[in-house]
Image (cartoon, rainbow, N blue to C red; front, side, top):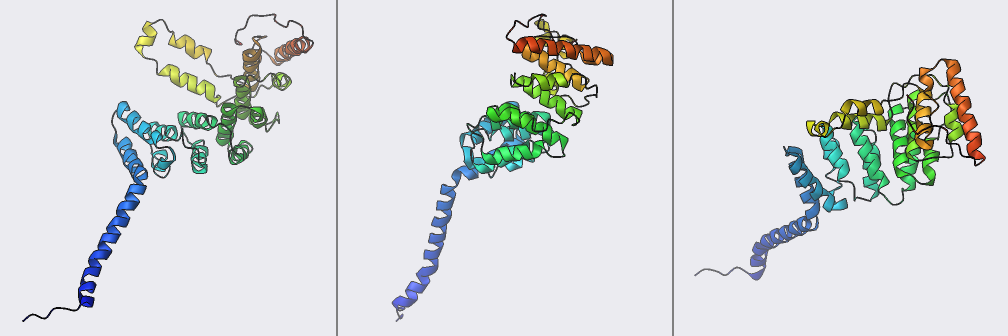
Length: 308
C-alpha cells in the first residue's frame, strides 16, 4: 500500500512551478511594457541592413512614430560609419523632446559630415523653445577653440532664430577672430535677415584674409547642385552657372560684401577683386549708403546683384 505524502511535501513540490510561472509572467509584463523600445532596436537593426532608400525611409518613419521610446536605440545609428545612416538617426529625433534627445542632437553638431550637422541644427530649431541647457552648450561651443564646433554652433543659432540668435552668432565680435568663423557668422547674419549689424559688416569689408572653409550654406548649395541629374539639365538648368552663383567668398571682406548685398539689394563691388585702396573706396560707398539709409532716404542706387 502506497503511503500518501503529507500536504507540506506536496506544497514544496508545487512551489518551483509557481515560481517559474511568476518569473514568466514578470518577463512577459516587462516585454509588454517596453514593447516599443524593443521594436526600436529591431527597426534600427533593419535600417542599418536596408539596401534601398525606400526601406531606410520606412524604418526611419517607424522610429519617428514612437518618439522618445526610440531614444535608447538611436545612438547605434548616430555612431554608424556611414553619414547617410547617421543623418537618418538625426531625422528620427525630430519628435523626441526629452533632455536625452537634445543631448544627442547637440552631439550630432560635432559630426564630421556637413549634411548631418545641418540636419541636426534644423532638428534643434524645430523645438518650440530651446532650453537653457541647449543655449548654454551652443554658447560654449561658439566660444570654444574647436573652429568646426564653433561654426556648427553659429549655424544652430541661425536656424533656431529668435532674439538670442544674433547674440549667439556674434558672441565673439573680435575682428581678429578666425577668418572662416567670421565668414560663417556674416553668412548667418544674412540668413537671419539681420538689419541691425550693417556697421559690423561694413567694418569687415577691408579684411583681405583668405576664407579657406566656405560657410555651410555655400558648401551645401554646391553639394546639392553636384547631385543634379541629367533631367534637370535637360529642363534648362545650367549647373555651371549655379555653381558660379554659389561661389564661396575668397576673403573675409568678400563675405561681408556678399552678406550686405543679400540684406540690402545693393552692390558696390567685391573688395577681393580690388587693390587695398579700392576696398577702402567700396567701404566708403557703403558708409555713405548707410548714412542715407539711417536718415530714411531712398538708398537704392544699383540693381540687386551679388558682388562679381
